[in-house]
Length: 296
Image (cartoon, rainbow, N blue to C red; front, side, top):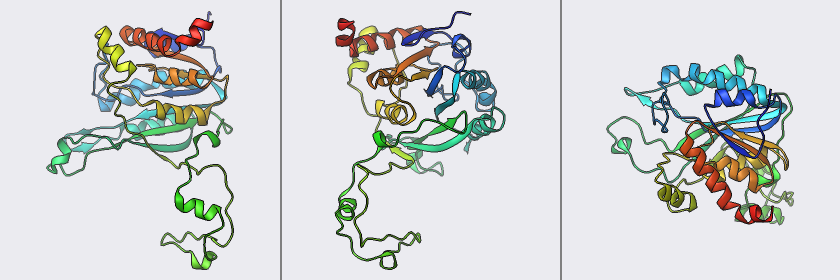
């Protein structure tokens, strides 16, 4: 079999194209597949009913597991939906399938909080719930050991933390007990790690409406319905891979994962079933790295 090359976009259904990726050759998969019953994404049979979602995803999941290295990770950005007044459970059923049947290991469930989520029908208060301003990002590993880099994802220390780093806190643990029962020894200078643990909530506003990619879509008259922010892809690529590693996005869409991977010295593979999306992702990659291309 002739396997596909890295640093390229491929057009086709990912369950088919993935068969041409060399086994155990990918270090990190970061992807956001079509959400249930949401959009056609310009291709046939792209709308998946909630009750069919897990079955629909199984062929892709098996291929993702096959192509990952034993130390590889799989980050899945996904969202659920409300049908007839009831929030559906397919997201959680998929997580259970991935872990119990394919033997992925759930490393951490992350929440992507979008503070710029606009008001919608739920904001009227007439549907018994608030608007949803977050999506899920599940980090799975293939084995018991996986790449994880804390340093590049640390958050800058806040003013209060800096006070403790300078040894200006007051009192020992007995004087610093929180309602949660956490205690802090503030009588000594705390270790400076260059930033704090970012935690499991990633707050990134998805508001870009006049950037290069948007202008490119308008120029080519291509409607791209959904893409996640570069900062979200960057968080997982920096944390879950190293320079020179291979990053794969089997639903690459606008190419965000691939662009960020290249920005940070990773090899990449992008797959999408919509030829227009593949074309515009390729144009985006070439334009954003025009200087590098000219030097090559």
